Each structure stands twice: as structure tokens, then as C-alpha cells.
Amino acid sequence: MSMYTERLQVLVSADQRRRLEAEAERRGSSVATVVRDAIDASLSQPSREERIRAIDAIKAMKGKHLSVEEIEAIVDEERDSNFPLVTRD
Image (cartoon, rainbow, N blue to C red):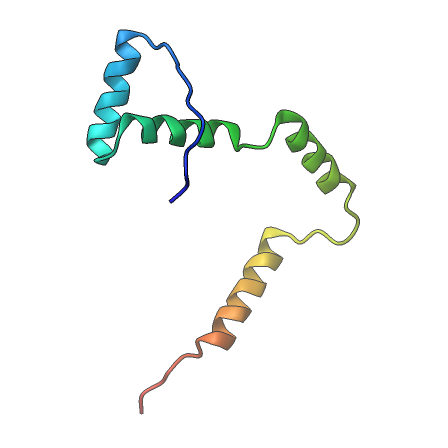
């Protein structure tokens, strides 16, 4: 378990407090845990700039692009090689 060393005071509305408490009760956890999880979920996402850079990198890729049919054929081939049909005589 992480050692929490930083204290933070946040003012919330009565409605926000009720929702936090309801979520904590639903999870069987503390309000503090719900808040920490919400912070992690919100701030651990890539930034808009990072997403744009990733899209630009994908667009700049060279090479053959497979059609849906080609991808399905590859998946079917892999599945068949890993899970051959068993026939009964």
C-alpha cells in the first residue's frame, strides 16, 4: 500500500459530498479513496497534445495497410493453426 504523506483540503458542494459518500459506500471504501481514484483516472489520461502527436505519428507511418478481409484471414489462419479441428471417426 502507498504511504500517503500529503494532505489536501478541498471544498465540495453538499451534492458532491453526497455523491462521494454514496460511491464510497457502494465500493466499500473511504471517500478519500474515491477522490484519489478520481484524480488518478482524470489526470493519468494522455493530454490532448499527446493524442494529436500519436495520431500524427500513425498517419506518417509507411507501409502496407491491410483490409478488413486480410486481417480476418490472418486471424482465421492463426486460430486454425493454434486450435486445429478435432474430427471423430
